[in-house]
Length: 501
Image (cartoon, rainbow, N blue to C red):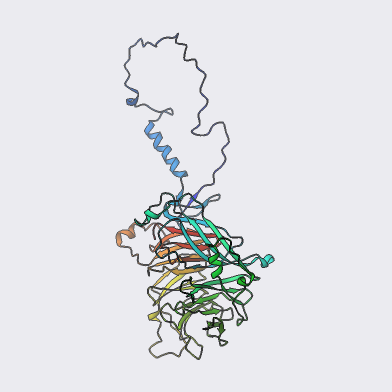
């Protein structure tokens, strides 16, 4: 969670609290005065037993208690989103005791879309310092648009927080425990002449079993083109010193030119090994591009049509190879089957009265779908409830909206990203335009006693686990191989893992 601290002022004055004047120059050798004699021969108790009023006339205990209260008032306080307000001069700083890992890394230009690349370092890694690979597209200023690029990155030296306990007893033997080491960001740049709106990575098995998988990226650009690159040599170069990336390796292996307007919706099918890509644009059209047996790509010129406004998000079903869902500015989520010759949605559900910006399909419980809209509301839907009415409905007909199984009006700005935990179907990460990334546990239910304890916390749902501050928060992704680790992007990259997840 974040804590707020008052801005420190530079004190001016003779002495600061805790400082003492220089000792007086007293000649201890002069003992001519001899010993002091008490003519009344009063008896005094030892010093540690004397109970007297302090220098201000009050008992020491009373004065010390008041001083302790004054210290508490200046100490950092917990910042609760929706309840606490920052005063002028106050800023948010992370509470290190709530993180197992926390690092912020900057790139030459902000990268408002990125994806995590699976590596060959093993699954369920708990050893520190951690290493991870990502790919991102930059958002350079329009005046310097030629500075845009795709960044293939390696994050290493990601140490745990000092004092954080290992959650895996086996990891302590291999843990180098470099808590004070600095993280390292290495990158290879692929020049572009356009901003990247959305980028996604896909891995396909190499024809040579002894080699790592081929890693492809699809970048939906502001120029309306979708650029597909093979970044396999870029990733390999991090672990092979002296490797030089050739200009030919920086060129796209395919450029999809089917779109007549720019777009933001991109997704690779997780069930089509060779590579099957969906892209959606601001005209509401969705195109499918498939990799052929020969390694080339073919784009079907017949678009999927049904949305009445921009397609903001596309997600393939994690369990059915021919099914995908799309979210749109028209407030609907539509479910499609690529085998349909009509290229029309099988189901359409009005899930919001405003733009639906993002969506996530649960990998663990595949009838659950999460959505996030422009009003800051995110919700969870049970797709089993999305059925035509008793009288039947034609394919593509918008159905009467069922109630979501969960809905949270916590964020007060647009939802910019939502993603289910890769192995826990109750945990969801959400980022929003209020500069926060939040973690949620849908399994939390309060009993009567717990409700009393939280009655004073207004507008904070009990399912809210954690709030992470991220300036210009745009996308957040769970790392699929490092349990509980997240990467978020905005003004900079934030890599973190909380104590609670």
